[in-house]
Amino acid sequence: MRRFFLPVALGALIFAFWLNPSVQDIAAGVAIFLFGMLMLEDGFRLLSGGLLERILQASTRSTPRAVLFGTVSTALLQSSSLVSVITISFLSTGLISLIGGVGVIFGANIGTTTGAWLVAGLGLKVNIAAFAMPMIALSIVLVFQKAKPLRGIGYALAGMGFLFLGIHYMKVGFDSFNDEIDLARFAMEGVAGLVVFSLIGAVATVIMQSSHATMTLIITALAAGQITYDNALALAIGANIGTTITAIIGALSANFQGKRLALAHFIFNTLTAFVALVLIVPLRELVDWISAALGIGAADYALKLAVFHSVFNLLGLALMLPALTPLIEFLTRRFPRPRLDISEPHFLSDAVDAFPETLEAALRKELVHLYENAAGILLKGLNLNQQQVYDSEDIPALVRASREAVEIDMDAAYEQRIKTLYAAIVDYATHIGSDDQHPERIERIHALRDVASDIVQAVKSVKHLRKNILHHTTAERGAVTGIYDDLRAEIARIVAEIRLLGQTPPEQRSALWLDQERATVEDRARHTTQKVDALIRARHLSAADATSFLNDSGYAFAAMRDLIEAARSFYIERDPAIAAVEHLVSLDLEEMHETLKGDAPP
Image (cartoon, rainbow, N blue to C red):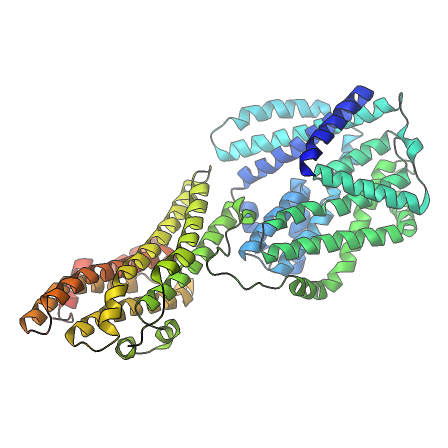
């Protein structure tokens, strides 16, 4: 069906152009208006530099603040679609709560009504095309600048210019119809008119993917007398239903949280539209009263339509806010948290790809997921139970007591639980690193990619150990079992300590433990050969076992270094002042080696 849509749509447009040249002005006006909205969105994305996303995160800590943010941001951006997509992205990543996201969507519906006021109050009463041309001309100079803020201003200015130009051409097109075709003769009265024109408004919005564009089209047609006031009210109600399709499309690639938000958006708009249709008569009388109080003329139907658009959306907000808690409970039941496949990415999806703030947060969460998978594989590869290691207060004793072989296919586990996640992380990190982003953000993204690489290398190192771990530690074999137990205990202890580091509040984390741990690893690595030589001389270790152990110890210490480096890069986020203090109070690496020599094993 989809493959026929494009040729049919193009054919219908060309036929309409041939049938009546005035259609060209209207269609061009809609196209220019939609192009202006795209440029305006791109401009605000460049101009905000992540500011909009950070404000969203801070503004969803309470429902009133979330509603206010949705209202103000949509009024400024003139795009409820952009606000909806950003909100779905943040919700999918876990940066905001579901109730906060629903509050933003409610507010966005109020903010979108400002577009009707802009068109009815300014676009139809002022020759805005005269403003559009200079704005577009000035914007081109700014668009070609290297500085992102200047380019953002350029895109935003061009977007506003094209919005004004689109409104102008729609107005010209409908004015031309007055001399040729009277669309008002197709008006329908009563319930049939409400239902049919509501459906037309919904379909038009679905096709144009913008309720702003639909409302502009409705207002310009109403001002030109091409549709009746009653039918315009029904079209406006239908446009509110159709605009939910953007959130639904955005949620298709999102996780369960994004789907919850899209359903909330659909429920809010559909219920609001239904109530407006049922109460159309008293609402129309209320609009007449408000319009008279505001000094709007009785025959100024364009401005009265803007009043109606605001009134019925406010009515929907008044109806839904008291029912917010039951709504959240319903959404949670309808889209429960799924049992996640640990072999697949949990946080990286198309829904978070468009916004650097959410992608960076999603990458960090996915790295935690990768590390949890890796920790389980590492410990099983060492013949250890993960939960027992985490609960143990004496890991060396636990290791000595762990003689049962733990079933795991290291190659299969790596392919299923590590490789897929690592590929997704590298793909997303490379993708955003190639975009036009701030150098500091790109540096952080690349650092996160390196953390993933360190984790993967640690797993690969333990894969090499697995065969001899099984051979030497599932039964007591004297000194060789003891030295392999020491390696197992060291790796297990570092894995457990990194888990505790992740559970520590960020402000209490310090690099000092990692510095000391790294020094300890290096010191033990240097003393390993001496220890093996002593065991050989004492005839506690054969030359063959010694050779295998020295090779395996290289893999083991490599795994320890990779885990420590990954933890340092991921968890230790220090500002310059804290870094300077820690530098003063920490020991130099060489000094640590000297200090630890007395405690190191012979």
